[in-house]
Amino acid sequence: MPGFVPLGEAERLLAAVDAADWRTDLQRRVQHYGWRYDYRERRVAADMRIGPLPDWLAPVVSSVGDVPEFQRRPDQVIVNEYLPGQGISGHVDCEPCFGPVIASLSLTGHAEMVFRKSRTGERRSLILEPLMLIVLSAEARYDWTHEIPARKSDHIDGQRKARTRRVSLTFRTVTV
Ligand SMILES: O=C(O)CCC(=O)C(=O)O
Image (cartoon, rainbow, N blue to C red):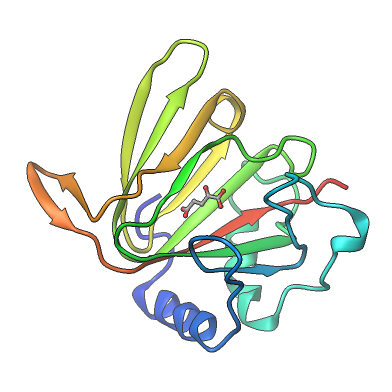
């Protein structure tokens, strides 16, 4: 969904993100809201609840929750920051931890996202652009992995485009 939020809203969210503290235990910086997620053990447990989402996230969580695929309002948001050369390896989001719909909003920066269907080896790709929301449900949520290759540029519209800092918000419903 290109242009899911207006530019001013993305700028407001980015300013709030940049005023908050980052976790630095992964290769890329992240922030967790609502619930912590344990990347190593691929786990969320009842004692990993942080608390209600902060007020600055309320408008965007409400808009994302209104996307028809979501049957309940997201209660976890993870901020990911990718500097040029950083990415995220292929994965299906933890099945027992999170509900059937995952969404990701790009606040700034372009990057190619690659989808692979493990059973058939099919590959598709999508250029994620600022203000775009992607919604993964059904087959896209469970049968395809998604990844952002760790590289410094992408091939976009026949041209090599250098990456800049990319920041995204992912929205999930926790099912513990
Ligand atoms: O940065 C993104 O848009 C996707 C992030 C992602 O796949 C994840 O946090 O599991």
